[in-house]
Image 1 (tube, rainbow, N blue to C red):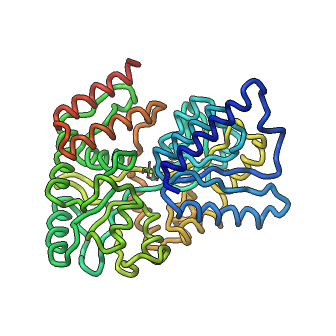
Image 2 (cartoon, protein in one colour):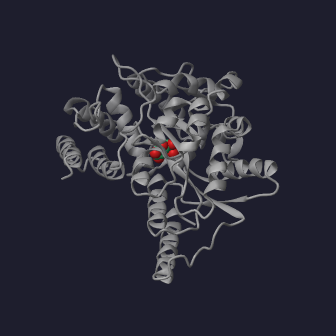
Image 3 (spheres, rainbow, N blue to C red):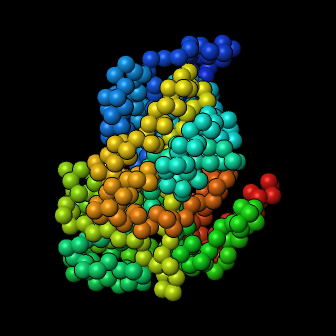
Length: 422
Ligand code: GLC
């Protein structure tokens, strides 16, 4: 089923349950259940397989239950958030454990949809990487347990490129030269109008020295020059065919499929794509031809990658909060689970010790160098609204439908209105 069809089916279902239960407070659920439901989505089928693997590990250690059932949600970040908003807003008690993109924690916490995990905090802080813990804290409270972290990385065709480029300028040069010779597009990434586009724009903008907000998180900086230069870079890359054809309709999965079909010399994506392209997906044509490296920098600047990742939260409407809390603790703190995420799914563990245990793994070694300086998107309950505006302006500007200066101006006005509550 397409994610749109899935979204509308679930929306109808959620609305139907709200109507059916209106006036009878707890008709959908009575007390605790023997089964916990874990709602998860993320990027694609890889997320479901990862969740099933984790659940199997839990079941082996907890033969007397509770069982955990995986409820797969749409893969795209935007659709996934909308579904969860609908279900949690309706107070549905059918979900216990929620996989949340790091950027949604403040909004979900502020809406009262999550359980305060203060009892887990000392242990989580002791064993997890500081960045992902920070991303699970809002207003001084821990609202989720880190599950996987994420950072943008560069994939390259190691059979065609000797050394990966360290600047964006070189990436374009090499991509064009090698691409022309071998009939490949220089570069592919996710250019659809959604959260993944915002991540990419911010990597360019931050990489040129920009900051969206000041340190207080209240004053808007969003400096004109890096904002316009980042858009110009994208617009030129789009118009001049640096980005692969179809870039403007691609999310991560579509970009990965283009790259693994031999469609591009370079790709910007997340670590999950490695396992998929190196044998996980039987359609991959690039097994054994994959190089990974930090993202390039703009000449004279340093490389900046965005911090991504997913945390596990307990739904405030869960009928079995203690068991759900134990499950999220297990995922965040179990060495076997966290090592398995890296070894079997090429995901970035949040457990510190995994980076010692797996130093010989090339992906883990790369992550160990890029994660410490990976940059979080602004931490605010308004992120969904800010991101939606950024998606629209950035998309309009790089595709040539919106004037660059006007896009930057509109974004700055929107950011100002957000902080003044306008
Ligand atoms: C990845 C990241 C997440 C980000 C998303 C954008 O799933 O982990 O943080 O928001 O990609 O598409």
